[in-house]
Image (cartoon, rainbow, N blue to C red; front, side, top):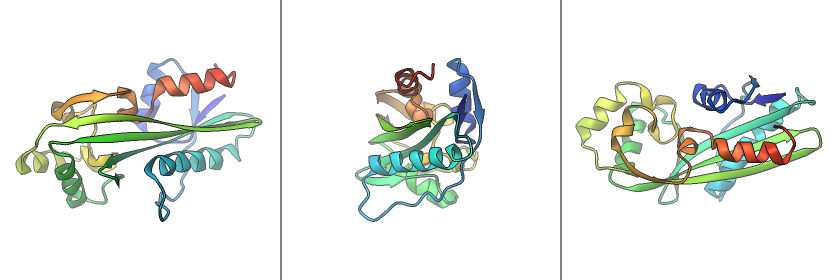
Length: 185
């Protein structure tokens, strides 16, 4: 059985929409960047740590760990700490192109496979009033980079290069390919 090591409703919805059958068992691990750690390595490590934490309890299953980060000019933007942090992040992203990286890890009987997907996203220029109005909706509070491409913020995304679902939080095509390679589908 496939087990998603995440409580993310977006990841669950993406897997359901793609026809996957799975169970949910969130992993609670600290999400701290190590000194000198590259963004892609960070996302893959967190995905691996989440999958490992759950796989130790689900040894006969295939566990899927995932972690999504936003990168702009080398700075990693995770989930905002508070509304002020969300405002800061959105101000940084306004009128610029950034990258969204999702680390994926599958751990099953006899294997561990970690990879990542990167998508470039262009956000139009935002006014301070637009940012404030968006922040008070609460939508940015639990999202890397303080926005959800599938929600209100969709009005500001002028172009993406790469996997749209990666920006939502799970590169479904990559997950499918990885599972197929391991005989999980």
